[in-house]
Length: 376
Ligand SMILES: Cc1cc2nc3c(=O)[nH]c(=O)nc-3n(C[C@H](O)[C@H](O)[C@H](O)COP(=O)(O)OP(=O)(O)OC[C@H]3O[C@@H](n4cnc5c(N)ncnc54)[C@H](O)[C@@H]3O)c2cc1C
Image: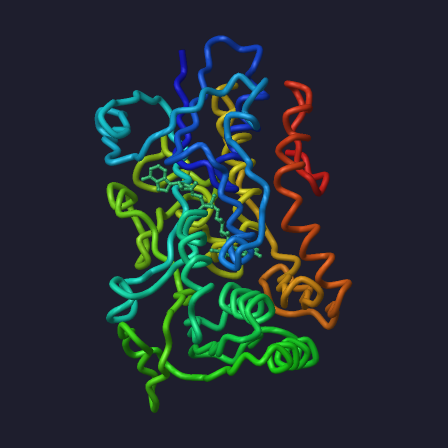
């Protein structure tokens, strides 16, 4: 019996689990177990909606795994013993022969003094729900971080709570990596929604405000969307300067090749550099790890992973957005969408993982599925 344990049922881990379980469902020498903190699938892309009191689908991991043959083990992973090949899950241990490490990332509240104590985050459905409750009684909010998560959160909050004073603060101009016209659209949308944008370093989070370079902005709430960190469990392997597991081209840990690392938790090198954490790149890494394990089980060498970005879709409330199409290295192309079409595109992208997993479940045991038609 080969025990394959997948840690983390986010976009990447779930893709790995479904692909592996479906492809091995007729093989009773392989057991696939998916471990996750809870049984709710966190649609992280929809957390700004949850944070503003909008209803989102209640997706359950066991429902998705139904029929694949994969086992689900709910619980919090507290340690990974690579010598004994065991994972400790709350009080119990699970043995593995091969591990897929997909524990993702959370907002790095250690990056700014005071954020640990005073910042709200969008790490989970529960965190976003707490923020929704607090926003209902607030008069001002600062969002830290001008990347897509910060921009989407600011736009969603401003459009659902027009009475709130909303400030978006961060080191870079919002939409900094976009085509100038796409960036101008994004900027105009934030202005229209009444979001004040400030280009500044966030120095300190206080109980009632935020210290920036040259001013202190009073705020009832501070949402941190300015960067992520990964679980310290990764430190049992070779990691990069951000604590992510360094992989070989086939996505195996360079120090422990019986561990595949995928999604946000992995430092995956491509010709253009190390991939940054996205759902866009995370799901293909999960699928690739599964296919590599299948090749290993068949006595073949796993193939190198190749990935190129193709878009950056950003919602600006429910009826507006910007989609920047990109080159493989994530640099902007000339093409972009704005307005309602962009909002619909973003919604299509956000909704696509769940039907994708469902379609994977229907693939034959001998076929590999990937939504863009790639086969390996
Ligand atoms: C608000 C927001 C909006 C975003 N929007 C976009 C977007 O539009 N497009 C895009 O491409 N990307 C977006 N991202 C980034 C994207 O969500 C991540 O890159 C993606 O979720 C990474 O997937 P993952 O499977 O690696 O990890 P995750 O989705 O983080 O999943 C990790 C899983 O592991 C579980 N876990 C963690 N630690 C433990 C433990 N110790 N024990 C048990 N379980 C554990 C977690 O509960 C979680 O279920 C967004 C992120 C956020 C926060």
